[in-house]
Image 1 (cartoon, rainbow, N blue to C red):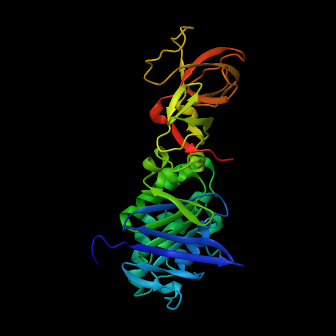
Image 2: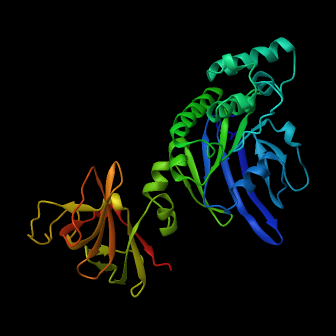
Image 3: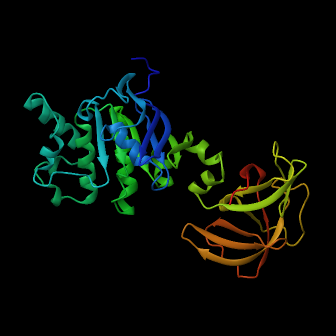
Length: 361
């Protein structure tokens, strides 16, 4: 097998239910040791894609390859148990009547001594050796999650499919368990296809994110790139709150309270949405009523009136009404900053933090 051969390759998968395409020409590659996340809202097709790859659901069109070998098309199908794919789900699915050690070793074949050695190795790796003779009900949620992980890893799967595996854990455990799980999977060199609807989880775990919408992958790339170069307004909004200023293009420019924005390649008369995140709004504390500066490197500053300010823990959220056109803008500011409603402040937005898209909605 070449180093360039994907561990998992999905080619033009289509899955229909009652004539509706739940998956519509989905294609994806996952390399050995890579974590790829299918990210999107409920009902976008993420879990259906996972079931098709696992072999528990059949596609209507397209192919699935593992290490360059066809495992499934519309005529040929390798059974799920022979695809070398591990599965992890939200409910862990541990056998309540088996001990931890027997749960982990359940799917193993070969000599007893080899099976026992593999179980001991994996339990030691996740710090659960002393729980080998416990039953699942005697473990915490985090401990059960670790058992589910090593049980899925025990047969040395080439691919791990994970469907919202951490959503049942409380916030205090989730980050630690995610990081620990990722470390074990990387050590094993397993290709991971992870399904989640939480952008923070995808950003934390994934080497690559495939953003899904209505059965299609609408954007794919590294977390940094997909966050900082969204393909449309909906993609930007999926990762965080956004501010939107709407304007009409005239001479490849759009006028806003923050000055003119370039709109290259967009026809005159087209309405566009200028999108930017609350954390990129800058409050100019030094302007002291001097008014806008045409040479401001962050664009023209504009006056806005505070509507409301709330302390959110690590930051404050301040809501403004733009003085010029009444548009509503949100800004997040590190630490405690709680100006009184009615306060007038100058705002600016760095041009390189704004996105211009054809208007929707």
